Image (cartoon, rainbow, N blue to C red; front, top):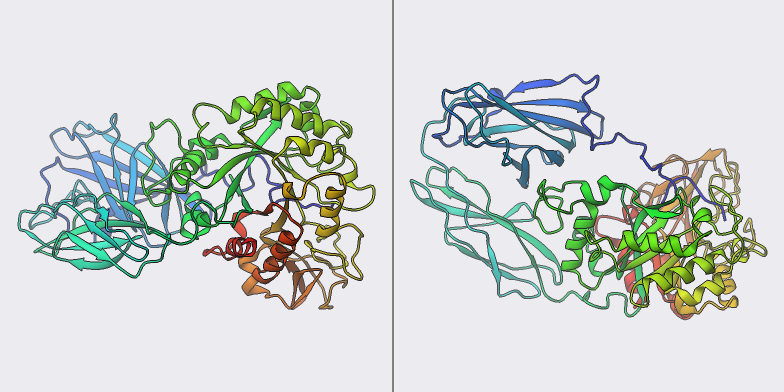
Amino acid sequence: MSTETRRRRTRSPHGSTPNKRFKFLAGATALALPLAAMVGLASPASAAASATATYAKASDWGSGFEGKWTVKNTGTTTLTSWTVEWDFPANTKVTSAWDATVTNSANHWTAKNLGWNGTLAPGASVSFGFNGSGNGAPSGCKLNGNPCDGSTNPGDNAPSAPGKPTASDITNTSVKLSWAAATDDKGIKNYDVKRDGATVATVTGTSYTNTGLTAGTDYTYTVVARDTADQTGPASAATTVRTTGGGGGENPGGGKINLGYFTNWGSYTVKNLVTSGSADKITHINYAFGNVQNGKCTIGDAYEDYEKTYTAANSVDGVADTWDQPLRGHFNQLRKLKAQYPHIKILWSFGGWTWSGGFGQAVQNPAAFAQSCYDLVEDPRWADVFDGIDLDWEYPNACGLTCDTSGPASIKNMMQAMRAKFGPNNLLTAAITADGSNGGKLDAADYGGAAQYIDWYDVMTYDYFGSWSAQGPTAPHSPLTSYPGIPAQGFNSADAIAKLKAKGVPAKKLLLGIGFYGRGWTGVTQAAPGGTATGPAAGIEPGNQYYKVLKTTCPATGTVGGTAYAHCGNNWWSYDTPATINSKMAWAKDQGLGGAFFWEFNGDTTDGELVKAISNGLK
């Protein structure tokens, strides 16, 4: 089956974009900005020692930047702690930070010293840094409540933060919030109640009932006090509340599996699963990818997996990571997700297009390979995160990015060893080829024999055709069925599923694959499939574009083989839509399949319309 160069398949192990975890100082021109000119809001007076805070942009790589703050004690007494506050425009955010604890409430950011760098003698200075997205500059800077240029503001002090709101009387559409009063030297005027960063009410008391909510949905609340001088203080700690109902719960797929791949290199975050509503509708997540090398399962990207620090704004539960907590990164966010959505099961997926070359060596000693995978998945630091393992070998005894000659029995032997080690209570799955042609990849390995050991196969029923055939003919990359003029027989979902059933794989152990992206050509004049082309259409990479983009830039104009295609200008794309997904899910149920899976969350809309289509179609 034809493949491409990225989707879960390609990405270089080190990525192709600037590595934002490092400090990009070499060759960069630091733009020091003394922030006297940035102060735009009145700040309370402070009894702290005189000090300044200066901002510099150390590096800018277009999609993000590295920022640096320097705090200097300009007074004559020792500074025992420091807090820097500033505002960013809505499109600018801190994504990770070092040498300070950085949190935010909407667009207002706060950085506090760590235990070892808060004390500054007169004349001493300390710096902390962060990586950010967007291109905005900070404004309204305050250091320990005073302007960052070292001056003081006249007038009274701003209020303290109210107590963390507590939730009660939670229904499908409402929640009551209560909090401890803030304090102020002149008196409290009122409170702003903020939901997901936006003010939803201003009240004079210390409670508020928010109505008109959506069932089965998460909302995050903070409260900000305002005094009689109209000064606002810091926000309270955040509380996340989930309304009742919503139809998700323990069985969002109606008894069928609805599994999505979550990549450790994309811009999609675990929190997006919550904000899109997808967490309610999926049943399983495959976390991609771990590597296979030197006969063992190994970490794919330590920084993204368990080292990256998440701010409160990007965290599933609204709580920022600390520098010294034992587990950070995606693993910790997935742990938090499971706490809120206990029906979700998570598997760690190993291999993929780029990292399948190591399987051939690994299966020479299946027991040792299985032991290495078990030791990694069940590492005490994250054993509670994962419910099993997914093996994405592309392809046993066939060619993918590299060619394997381990023999037809290699996949059966591998799965037998994995089941023996992982036992009956852990999930064991595999992503496999969907080449249903005679003598093709499904015939090259003993998928039928391996099926007795697995829970299910993720059958990759996409990427049948694409712009790797640069001149065409144009054809849909994920046809459900054959059609007159299809470029290759057996390259469709129905033939692949039929072949696997004929090999003895139970239908309930087969999941139908859906791609959340399109494949396309340019230089195409013919609207119907089968036209000639001059090369790949432009996209996130040549010939590949997310559904969330194509649905508006090149809407579907027809269907063929049970999937959609679009001709716009001189471009021709094929992709699945909610309508074609609904038809595919009806077919999957009619075939008795165990459900469906998709590659991958990044391609869906912000409200998760493709995940929703799969969920509704499987019910």
